[in-house]
Length: 224
Image 1: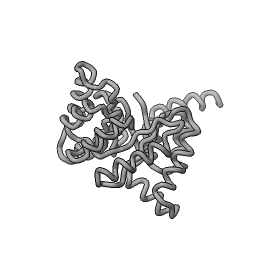
Image 2 (image 1 turned 120 degrees about the horizontal axis):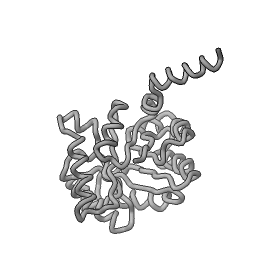
Image 3 (image 1 turned 135 degrees about the vertical axis):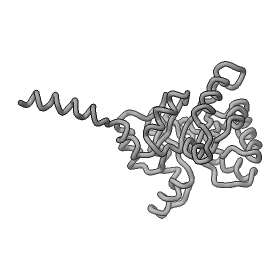
Image 4 (image 1 turned 180 degrees about the vertical axis):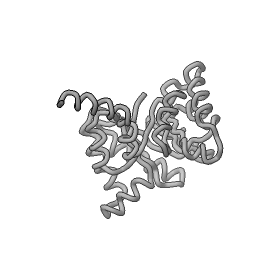
């Protein structure tokens, strides 16, 4: 089970990475747009900065999202990222999963580009993404609960299918859209291979009140 940082702020990434608890980073268009406005830089410039930082590490996973919506332009954009940002990282191209985008996903996989099928919320979407050969199947936990969809049962069932049947066993289930820290443990228990979450959630689950109380008791006894 792996933990990833979900964001586009390099300072936040470095702070989390220095703790030694993550092995990848996922970005999305919303995170990136916020940083682009703050730094007054283009999307390509931001991706270059992120890749430069991540490539210093040992084969970290890195997911960049396409911004084009026309299929031919999406494929061109993905190839540009693959050519520019795949060195010294395990690059995945994020493609929102939909009927129209299945052609794009299929074409990218044929060209040897690893795909992170993102914005997944349904059981059959996960089954199809695994059959297509997507490297990551990214379930959006928060979006699912918004629609009264039970993410735990769907993720559990898709994970079991991948493991027990003739689906692509290289496909990993990634869970994002984490709104509460306790969701991370729920996602792990139901079979997620990877959970990606924002900066503020790490301190919430890495520190626990009773753990801090126990440590303080020991320190007080030692210093008395």
